[in-house]
Each structure stands twice: as structure tokens, then as C-alpha cells.
Image 1 (tube, rainbow, N blue to C red):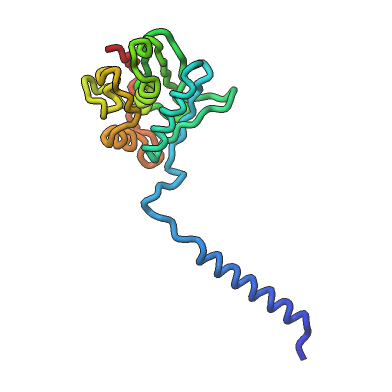
Image 2 (image 1 turned 30 degrees about the horizontal axis):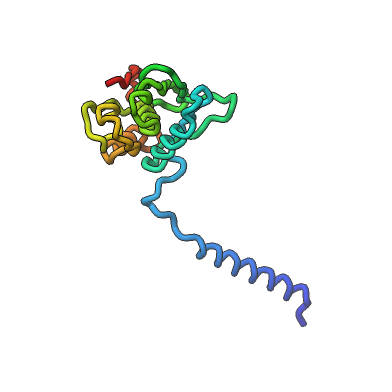
Length: 192
């Protein structure tokens, strides 16, 4: 005659086996087309000295984060080091040419002189962040090129990198590693 403890133990074993089998079948296999989180380079930015540009910076960051998969821009927590320092100035926008690496340093100056002449703040912020990610100016150029900057005219509000610009940034940060080519370090001034 079998003990009731045996039935309880057997029931628990069957339940655990069924739960394991169900869990194993519930999770789909990872899609190889989706990049793993380990391959993403995270760069922190500090915009605490960019008063009046907060919305434009947030939109510029969202544009880059929404269009490139292997590098992400995140706001640095107060008191922590950031690779990209963003400040508001009275001159023309300018930025250090990257690609900036984790632990590196790039400076973005969002100049009000361009805004006073009618240029779009969000386009300016996205354009200057593009420099930090390693993109030079492509002047003169059409509005469809984010890196054409002020040469596209004051009516241009495009803040989205085109396919070639996205591909160049993706290449610079491929495999979760920043290109071994050192950041250029030149300061690019975006005056017309």
C-alpha cells in the first residue's frame, strides 16, 4: 500500500515539471535581428547648464535614441560624470566632434544667436548631438540631412538623421564598442 506522502510528492513533481515545460514554451526564441542590450553603448549627458533648451534637448535625444540602436543617450544623474556637457550660450551653436566614448568628454554649446536668426531649437540640439556622435557638417546640404545644419535655411525644422547619418553612427558604435579611431576633438562652429 502506498503512503499518502508519496502521492503528495509525486503531485508536486508533476506540477513542477508541467510549470517548467509551460515556461519553456511560453518564451519565444530571441529574434536575431534585435540587438542585445550588451551591444548598446550608453553615453550620459548633462544639460544642467542649458536653461531654456530642455524641451529641444529632450526632443533631440529622443530623435537619436529612436533612430540608432547601438548607442543610447541618457541624462546623467545629478552629481555624476557625463560624457556630453551641454550648455546654453549667446553665440553660434558648436560642438566637439566625436565619436565620444564612454568616459570621454565632448562639449555641446547651444547658441541663441542661431535661434535669434530663426533656426529651430530642436534641429540645433539634434545636429549638435550628431557632432558628439561623430558626424561632421555636410554644408551646404538639403533639409533632409540633419548635419546640413544652418545651410538648410531657417524654414527647416527636420531633427531626424537620414539613413546615411544613422548608418555612420551605427558603424562608429558597432558591436557595443566605439570605433578605435580616436575622437576628432575639433570644435565645429555652426555659423552660416
